[in-house]
Picture (cartoon, rainbow, N blue to C red):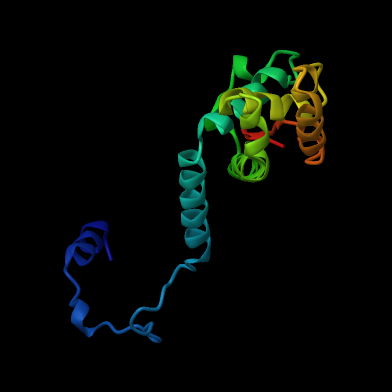
Length: 168
């Protein structure tokens, strides 16, 4: 065949009603596995829930975490990053820890007149062993209890991953 004949054959419509797949998928069967999409959808839903849970305590906690943690360049993370840069699992862990701390210890810090923002800030600083926090506010026994409670959560060092997200 010559080229113009090949082009004519290629342009001729083929009757698709005569074509049947050898093994047609059953109704509702997915050709592409849906598990990765479902997992991504679930993670996005969890992140949305976590961001909606950013009450003043948690916002102050994250703010303190970003300004007191240093990047590889020696600059505070908050100079280049914000809450949107937290990896999903990091954000969810931070929200979980803040909710748990508030549920268990809010009555203590409220008893001494501390608001949620200051308590969230101090929770991060105390947890990480910085030079300020619950212990240096002259709160007496309640300050000691809050200090011990915050330290029981252990360290949570933040770092920037290769993907530009913040992990802890």
